[in-house]
Length: 460
Ligand SMILES: *Cc1c(COP(=O)(O)O)cnc(C)c1O
Image (cartoon, rainbow, N blue to C red; front, side, top):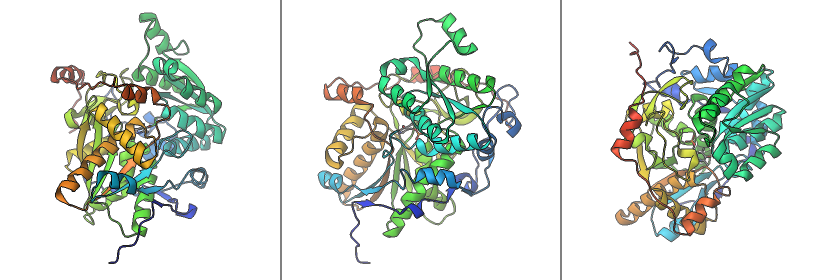
C-alpha cells in the first residue's frame, strides 16, 4: 500500500463524535470483582448505592453486560464545545529522537479545566440534573477534577460543592479561583461544615487535610443534604465508560488513515484516562480480533500495579466507601510528595486491575525527575506544556521510541496526553532549579500499607 502522508493533526468532524460510549466490561470474560458493602462483606446492591450516586450512574456502575450506551444529546452538545480532541502525529518529537517509530498522541488538554476529566464531569452532572437533583458534591486534591466538575455544573445550572484538601486550597489559589469563577462553593477540608470534619479538626486542629478526609466530607455533605449526590472523577466503572470517548475518537481517526497502533500507553492514577483510551482496542483484543501491547505508566513513588497487591480494599482513607478489589498499596498508604497529584491514589480501577491480573496489559513505574526530563523534551519539540501526570506517558513513549532506534523497528505508538501543566509551574520551577527529588518507597514502607488491608469474607 502506498504511504499516505499523515497530517500533523487528524481532526474528526463534529458528527464523528461518538454517539455511544463503549463498556469494555461487556467483552471481559473475567468480569471485575463487585464492590462490597464494608459492613456486611456482601456485593453492593443498586438500592444501597442510590443514596450516594444518582440512579442512572448506579445502573452504569453495575452494568457488566451492555456493550454500547447511548450518549444523551445534551452531553454530545457539550462535547462539541471542545471535542473531537485532536490526534497528533508527533513528527517533531520523532525527528528529535531520531527514531523509526511512529508516535501519535491524543490530546485531552484543550479545554479550560485542562484535562480529560471534563468528559466524565459533564456526564455525571447531566444525570444528576436529569434526576431533578439540586447539586453534587465532590473532593479535589490537585484541582483538575474540581475544575472540570465546576465547568459542567455551570453549564447545567447545578449547584457544586467542592471539598478541596486544605494544603492544596492554600497552595493552589489559582485552581480555587477558577472553580469559584464557574460558581462552585470551594471549602478547605477538613472543615466545620460536616460532622466528620469537625471531629478531625477537634482531634488535630493543625492538619493540612488529605484526599481521604475530603472524600469523607463530600460523601457526608451529599447524604445529609436533600437533593444532593456525590460524584467521583476516576476509578469507578462509570468514569471509565464515559472516558471511552477518548479511545473511540482515537481509533476512528487512525482508521481513516489505515493506521493500527502496535502499542498504546497511558498514565495511570485511578485508571480512567487509560481505561478510556484503550477501550475499543482492548475490546478487539478480548474478542480475538486484533492484538495490541498496552502499557500503564505510574509514578515509582505510588506503584499500585507494579508493587501493589490484588486485594479488596477501601477506596478512601476514612474507610467509609465501598470495598473494591483492585491493585492497591493499602488505603492508609501515604505516597511521598510527588508533583503528579492526579497519580497519587493508592488503588486502581477494578476493570484495569482485572485486565492486568489476566496478563492483558503491562505496567511500568517511572521516577519523577526522568518524567520532567521527558516533559521538557516534549514541550520543546511538540510545543505543548504537559501536565506532570501526562508526562509519565510521554516518558514511556520516548523510552519505547528509543528502543526502536536501537532495533530499527518501525513501531506505531499511541499515547494519551491527558492535560496541560499551567497550574503545575511550582513543580516545573523545582525541576528547572535542579531541586527535584525522587523517592521510591522501601519494601517496609509498602508493608505498612499492606498491613492496613481489611479482612474480607471470601466471595464463594
Ligand atoms: C486526574 C488526572 C490523571 C489521572 O487520572 P486517571 O483516572 O488515572 O486518568 C492523569 N492526567 C491528568 C491531567 C489528570 O488530571
